Length: 152
Image (cartoon, one colour):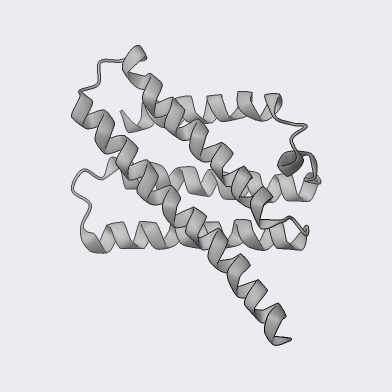
């Protein structure tokens, strides 16, 4: 189930990127930013897949994967800050990917026979992981703002 979801999510994300290429958050990316985002996106998909695949994730293993997701979120934020991207646009970009991943998970029952409890577990785990990414983005922006107020 998790690998099927990942394959469909990657395909759907690529299609959606073409549709949204003129959106502010995407149109402002230069080639280097696109490459860096693509690399982070691949890392995040790997972390997400591992997080989803582990049926009995130990608290320690799950925490490590969530920490990796937070690190990826921080990297997204640093790239966005380098490009002078407002927080709203950085979050809009993150939400675009979240929406694509969630929509892919919601459409799985149409394509395969998935028990409702398996689908619910998948959605919850995607949300937990992506919440960590989004909060990390906001934390970096918050720290940067606090530093600017203190004159650092």
